[in-house]
Amino acid sequence: MKKNRHNLDESVRFVAQHYQKGLFDPSTGWRRLGNSLPEFRRTGHLLILKRVAAMVLLLLITGIAILMIGNRPKHLFAQSDNTEFTLPDQTEIVMQKGAALTYDHHFGDQSRYVSMRGDIRFSVAHDKSKPFIVSTPTANITVLGTVFDVSEYDEGTALSVISGKVLFTPESPAVQILCSSGMRIDYKTKGKEINVYADDSSIFYSAEQNVLTLNNAPLEQVILLLSQFYNVKLYAPAEELQLRLTTSFSGQGIIEIVNIINFTLDTQIQITN
Amino acid sequence: MQVSKKQFSGYFETYYRQLCLHALHFMGNSEDAEDVVQEIFVHLWDKRERLDTVSSVKSYLYKAVRNNCLTRIRDAKPTTSIDRIPPDQLLLEEEQEERAEMEARIWKMIDELPERRRQIFLMAKRDGMSYKEIAEKTGLTVKTIENHIFRAMQSLRSKDFKAYLFFFA
Image (cartoon, rainbow over all chains, first blue to last red; front, side, top):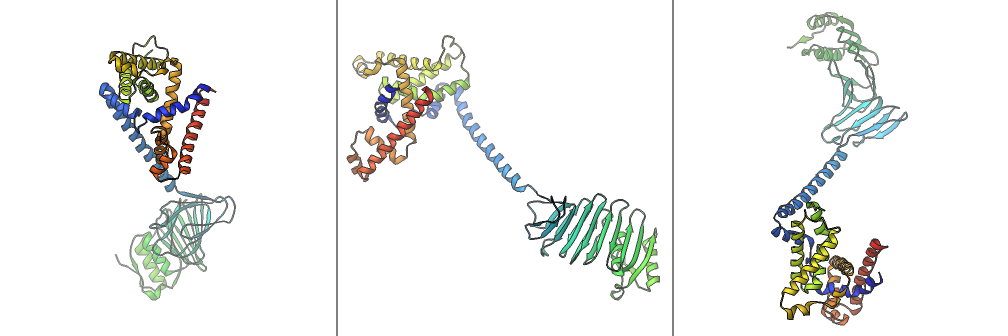
């Protein structure tokens, strides 16, 4: 070791005297060797190609990883009751224990779509251009107003509108039910039953049994439901829409139902197609 | 002993520069030194399947370079070739290998110095310029030149020392 240390200055001088940038460079030497050994000429190129390919692959993997991490859906899960959270659009939610909510990185771009399980109250931020849609395994709820509760359970979905208006669409039958402040909907997948409750009225419909029971139901709501259940257009004069109807239909066709209503309430409801 | 393509490129990457410096001590100029080393690697590849008696490729390469250089010197004109033989040819082969390895490390360290510091370092060590002469040429103060040289040497000494400890301590 002493000898090496002693000779360091001598070696430094020797190297400095002959030093030229790039001289004795193994990469340059390797390319030159390719002239004498042709089998290494391609290997040299291949080596570069391999390095380039490796770099490209590395960049690709990194890019995909970043993209995947960036695109990963956001999952919220409530470990206790009344867990509060604010979504990116400033919609506030209160989740009950066990509730889960998922939204992806597109949330807020064109629309506001979330899927959920359990009990969650939504106070939706106003944005008419981007509908707020809540999806449960058994129903879709398109939000037109502000505050509502959604309870998703094994047999169905329940909705309670606190304020504003909400469009409720069960899985089957896929009818749109407009719910305003104070209304509740209970949808059960078994029997495909829909119960719509308002302060002073209720509507029950079972798709399997083809039963429609109305209890002091506003004619406007009845016409809306019937037109969707039977896929027809119904017309009633505006002044008749506030009338109330209490009756039950079972197995009748739409023409018979309209006739019964017109006979009962003395209305002028027409099937227009 | 056989040498695969992968092993061969590994030997080339590891030993090319130090073998060039080893040859440079014999040949005195970089072009001849590189010619020798290129030739040795071509021989190594040609004999890759007939290296039964070779126990260490590194020692084989050093010996081959030394013999090739001495043959070239012998075959050249006596008047010039004798002058080329440096006095330290009496060093043991092992010492010559250690010297070439150290010089390869020094070469790499000079390569890695910042451009300005490398220029100043080479003016001092290669061109033998005094600090005052370098200061006048570069427009810097003598103190700055001293500082550059000191830092360059410090870098060489510390790296060389660490490398030595790594291999031999």
